[in-house]
Image (tube, rainbow, N blue to C red; front, side, top):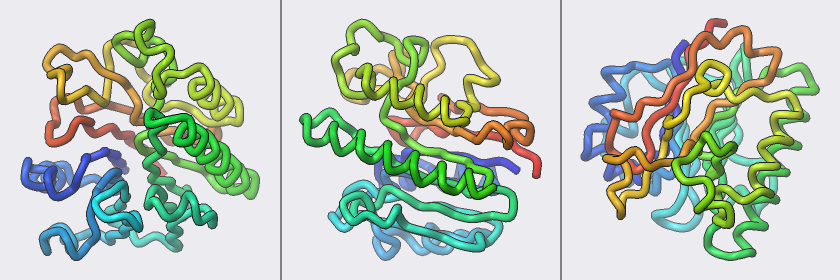
Length: 254
């Protein structure tokens, strides 16, 4: 199976830039999109009804903001749109789909740059997500988590670590949470296969950073340790354009 994750920064804009031509060519088993910024009725019919896929949406209550969507060739046995906490679920950041082999989290984690209140919201969201995932893992389920985490973990994961030490997205407290997440038994699949630097998934559009590869790796696939043997490859696709992020993915056998 091939699973992709992509923060498209607006599905309507990305569709005009070739998102679904690329999608149809790649034909992944599952595609998880973040920051879709739309409801199903706001997108073209071929997006709402992509042949061969079951499609699930979780738009934010606020118009044109956040939102996630999951396209799956196999119908999940169950779909959940949140953690059961209003302040998190209302922003349309969560889709959880159950399969025979694993539970898949498609998540657009909050950005904490606006102010201290949003940073606290982001950290609280992290903690609630971890508790929710751990509960499922402890019940015997395998866990696959993908999406925009809005945090670069190590210095290798962004071009200019020293300049960004005090910027949300690379704050010690955010990076420490990823350490905790890993300590709880989850594996960063890309770093499991690739130790080389200069591998990024987001670039600032305003400064033309992508052309210079001045970027951040903030989009991930994590799996629980027991499921790692099923993962055969993890990758980033920096040549795929259409957003300020690029797709990331894994190949698995089940």
